[in-house]
Image (cartoon, rainbow, N blue to C red; front, side, top):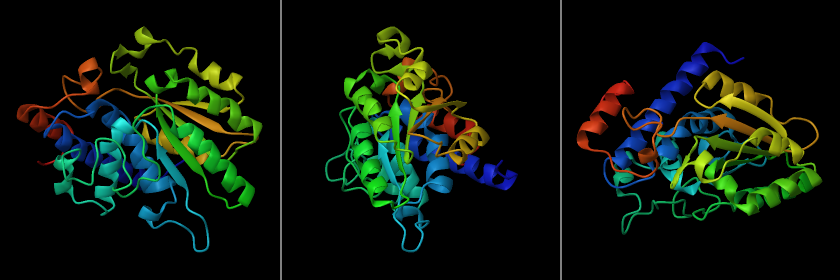
Length: 275
């Protein structure tokens, strides 16, 4: 169990990530919803769990972990982490995806923290399987984390990778599904139902854990339990699209939108963050 100080620090960090994400959506049309829904998960990953170059937690002589943002449209959450780590200036965020900016509307190698560029969905888990297999063969101790969206699970390539990972006993591979229930075309349950989602992963021989993706203690507890024995693990995180934006969260509009000045201010107030 994580100590109260760690929980409070990560919850504050998640609020800061949401503040940065709102700055982007207040400047232009952006994928607000999926970035806000995964903010708590991203805070736990980058400020407590992952050993990547950006965090300075890579052990001497050790190999860093890999992080792949498969749901690349949520890149503003990754950019927000880089701001908190001092790799990107906050002033750059409103320029994301604009001509001349190194920050794309999806992950690009020009931006810090991007190991694999993603845009089209359904690709990163396959890449993650390859990375995890290579690190396993090298006995490096490196872990690979892939963050997917639930709508992305409609891509057949995801399930080809899911079928492959247990074959190689990839205990160093963790997939996280940001299960916020919406995609561009509407509710996932209406566009292409996924349930019973946990049973599907279990049938593919993955270790499955389900949590509230906004409960920081639950997130940390699930991450601390990784790796599980005998094969890859998937964490199904139940989240709310556009979490933290009054009047927008939990709606289809949250997926891709621009916030008015009034909505930006009301969101910052709700987050208890001074503008």
